[in-house]
Length: 168
Image (tube, rainbow, N blue to C red):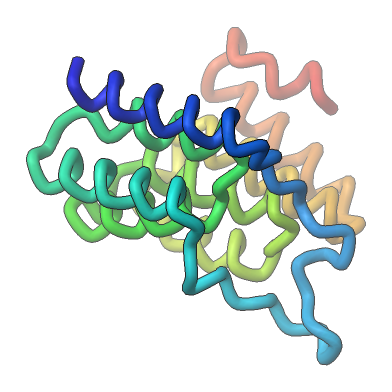
């Protein structure tokens, strides 16, 4: 409960300060040489507080999901990225963490980084439908619609109720 309250207080402070959620970049997350831009190393005071609260929660093994939710709602994607990196260090084979890390990279248009994270996750959890879906999204972004549809069909065969085929 305390972690949830701390996250809510940090979110309220951000709202009062007029901090607007960050928007994904329109440059595809790339620098002028076409390489993925590096995440920010510096955080504003609200983001720093969220990071401290999140790090404490992760180290205690509880409550970090509420902090992560607050960072994503604020658009503090670099903080979310950092929290997810810390979480992945503690649970390297957790498919949910891999899914969330990939989503953050996709949302911020870091497709190369998303693929780097997704490839080992898919290898260790080949039947995870969330990861199958995300691989399909990456294929669509790479103009490989046929490959995406094939992935989603295969996912649908694993679980006909999952709805991946409806996307295709």
